[in-house]
Image (cartoon, rainbow, N blue to C red; front, side, top):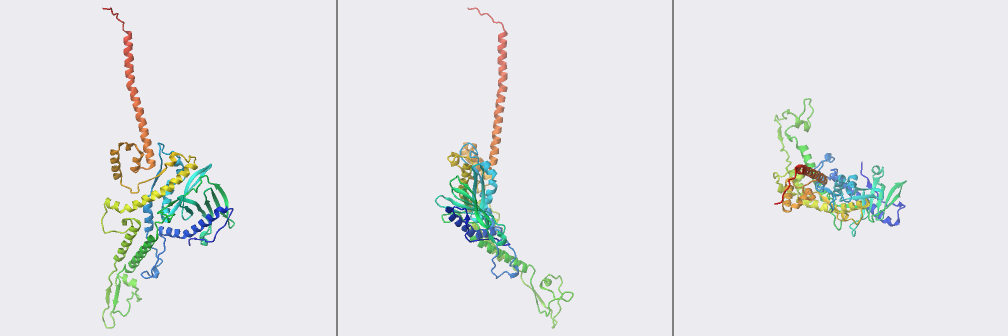
Length: 494
């Protein structure tokens, strides 16, 4: 079944204010223009890209043979696995002064954010949407670039407006036309829900926006001044190298198919060899026959049987290794993770760290870029949930990420030990536990256990103090009573 393709005619909307009509047309055309390219990148990530045959080495009979090279997925997943969210942090003694934990848990934030990160790396960006407030529950959800777009405001470093495609018509796949059935238009002062009814688009709901800006943020990968929505990890170079690698693997399959049995030549035979019933043997039957009976020719000479040398796979494997080297240079993915054997032996820890340096730097930059947008989204959630926009904790809100370098437990423990020895008061900070690799949930449980043990220790100390004081009091009381019962001797002056 073919993928739906975008419709290109302009669409009018009943009930849409005139000041938003230009934004509507621009964003709808932009979504349709980018849709086919985004689907192509998804196809490469899923290993469903069509082979681009050169019509030279591959016969027509094997054109439809499916050969998959998963390098685009590896380029995305290796980086996505190093961009790991570890909660929001701010100043103050309270671990959650803004009340974000309950809101994030209700929206499955920590589970869906990795999916949004992966989608950003595939399509160059994904979108964070905040909704609620005014009596409605506050929530956050994500959409990929397949179903949302917007207009970027360079001055505000954020979206000026956004358009989300909530649903497509039921006949979109059957007719091959991507036709939205329900959409949401985000503008600075209101949010409009648009629905397709009786063949026409109509505004069915208008909700005031109290934030004063669009509550939609872009997680853009490799963003710059000329590409506000970033770049995809599945870029043209990655797709070109993948196509070449697929053709190389297919040539290997063809060579293995044709040369898996030794190729023989029969010289001097008038007739092809026959089976026991006198029927001529085919090429495969002659090659696989355990016993081949061949008669003499008219001159009484026996035919000559020769065998061709088996074809070597070395040229194909060498080319695949060269392509893997180019792919590693283009994406920063170590060659050891591309499924290509190298001549060197097992790498040391230092060599592995050196090979992953570029990938770690890329992950840190990605965390910084995504963190800026997630911070703004979290601030919107807090404000819609009742937090004052001037709150000090809100102003110092930051996103905490796990270390993308992923050092070993021994290396982290050694580094933390040296820091604590140099600055002893660090041992009482939560930051030390974070550097040791504990998650926010683990840190909360550890500190709870510590507080419970401290409380039990204080209670034991008070009990022991009372146990020590009571015998002493009894001894003092008894001595006083004995002294009172003794007769008082009169003392005569001297």
